[in-house]
Image (tube, rainbow, N blue to C red; front, side, top):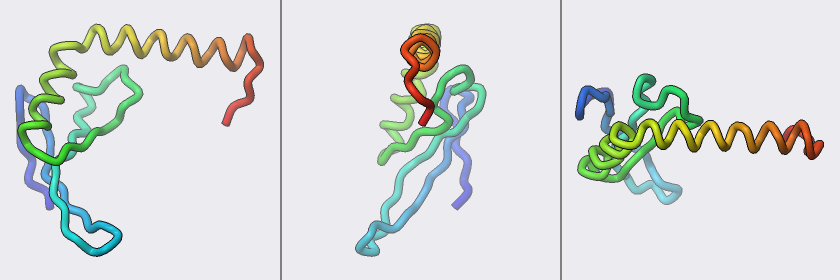
Length: 89
């Protein structure tokens, strides 16, 4: 079900899947590389198109804050492994 859509120059697509009891569900998925560059998130999904647009807006409007938080998270993970000796999973 490939039917690309755009919001603020970000690509997202409608998706469908079946639940464990065979009910058909529909939603949207975004894996836009430019939008998510520098973040540990490689894709995200929503149940409605309005929700997808809000999430895209959030990523665009708060990009620097999200990148700063990602940098802190990366430092914390590095510290945990290198200084505290926690084993890699």
